[in-house]
Length: 362
Image 1 (spheres, rainbow, N blue to C red):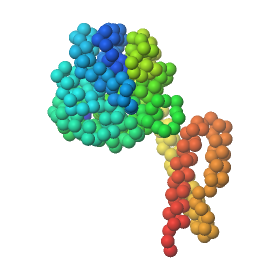
Image 2 (image 1 turned 60 degrees about the vertical axis):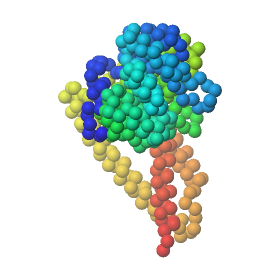
Image 3 (image 1 turned 45 degrees about the horizontal axis):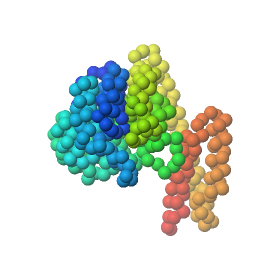
Image 4 (image 1 turned 180 degrees about the vertical axis):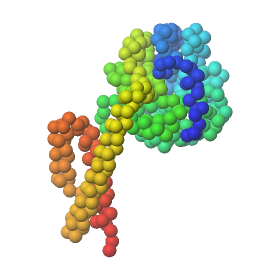
């Protein structure tokens, strides 16, 4: 799969000239609602119309979609607007019904991706299919589980593949409904550059006001498209009302989004970049050398603690380090959260190195 450059052909063949835009309601509610939204979207640089048919909800009793009744509505959307149609599938029966109604694109949702048995069932039901299939990242931040879901489809002969980054659940309070954890998406793109990656700012944000910022960041990171939930009357939506926007708002956002060049074209700029990267390389060497020297000091400290039978973790000292680094971060203009995360990682490695020495038997 890593060396198969044909995986992304489905996107190349669309010949869009702009990032792929997928839009539509969280849920298909009524025939009238679906058609109204689709007709408002068809001239807004939208290529794919999305709508939830089967909705996996956290607790029973919430609206779980109208089910297969919506599939003929989506067929009509395709006929009247020319938009491609995408829906979420979670079982082999969902796949069967989607294929019978000639749905163009199927995606596997975050909850389903987290279940290898369910993904395998879907992969088996799509064996050697030429349909386009997208895999959302699993609910939890697990890169290998995400990759595994894609691999199951690929091994079943499904080669028109893509992935959707919709953020990850977290127990911490954050600014997002689902923490984006961009590095996981970057790691996926680095390992599988041929697989198109779509960003889902609606599910990352969970509210309307940050959708544009998240979508822009995704494009800055060379994502291939965005999926944005859109409703003609968002406040009255039957599910996820807070994160849906109107087609007019979508059009305004798309108009403002900046698509940047993937590479430099100016030779002068390339030469300058090469010099700056050489500087970065030298600085990285110094940074690594400094970390090595720090760990050598840590080992000496561990030896003293072992001799005096003192605990590895010294919370007062650790708090002093964090306080000092926070102050220096503010003075230098560095992001305090970044510096704190960095030193927490360094501290964890310091503890690990000390434990090896303190617990080493004679």
